[in-house]
Amino acid sequence: MAINTASNVGGGREVYKQLTLGNTNIEHRTLSEGNGVTLTQNTNDVNVKVNQAYSFTMTGQNKFLYNTPEAPNPSDASPLNKYSVVVSRTAAAGGAAGTQQSALLVKEQNQSGNQSYEWLQLNYLDDYADAGENVCYYAKAYKHGQAPIWGGVFEVRNYGTNNASAMYGIEISLQSNGTSSAGLHQGCAIFFGAKDAGTASEQESGVNIAPVSGHEAAAKLRYGYVAQGKVYESFASAATGTKGLACYGSYSTAAIDLSGTSSTHVGLLLGKGQTIKFQSGTGNGAADTWYSGGFTPTFVGALAIMVDGTTLYVPVCSNHP
Image 1: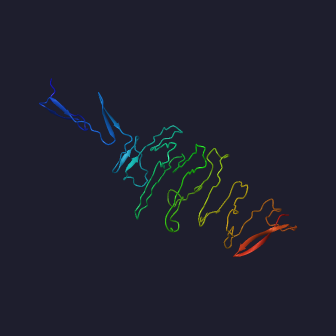
Image 2: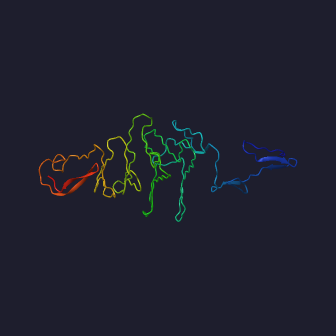
Image 3: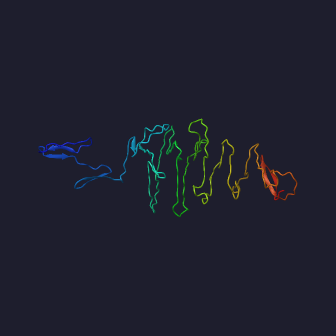
């Protein structure tokens, strides 16, 4: 039986075109290469290959990338109906303990000898808006179960032998011209409270500086907090609580050391009605801090105390009852 017709099946693009020369020649459409795609004609097949070095551009809205069921949006999250690209992944129950899985993995290896500035991820927000609240990078985590959770982690490990070059866990650069309104330009702001407004809550600490788990005995930190340059108030506390500054632990020199300051006549400034309290205890010759008995002191100097601009002197002796 002679073949006098041909057809395409399925709903895709049609390869068969038409019959010509009295129904004796079957014409097919050819395949052409597109951007980032190469076609190689072999003896029995046509090889289609995607050029992984080609820079693809995804334009428009609502582009999805996922290989698991799409993760639902949290009920109290901001509306997520406009986006350029979404990477969505649902981690089903049954994952092995201790394994790490990611919805998005971005990695790079910087070879020795490279002198360029390699920034693995760059978020750039060029903001001309006069309203709204515009964020260059935002991370939000919702805790529903008992497992520990982190809003963000920055970890740097030095696997080399050079400890002289810079290494930062996180850097915050705050720059602007002129003087900002009070409280509006902040390098790091920590806000705390309950999930629901008006509900009482208590968090443990705003900033916690501690050794990595398992390194408690050997790890050392030279400075827990450093403020340099022209800073009007190196440490300011405007909270309402029990103590403004508390020191715990063991210190070989002093819990608070002001001896390194320069051009500072007043080491400790108290307001009207404020006092310095000394705790009673052992080692001072009596049950109380102030001793009312008689003994012969050996004076070695005086402690200068300024009251309302007038310097007063308290005798200091080298012996005690």
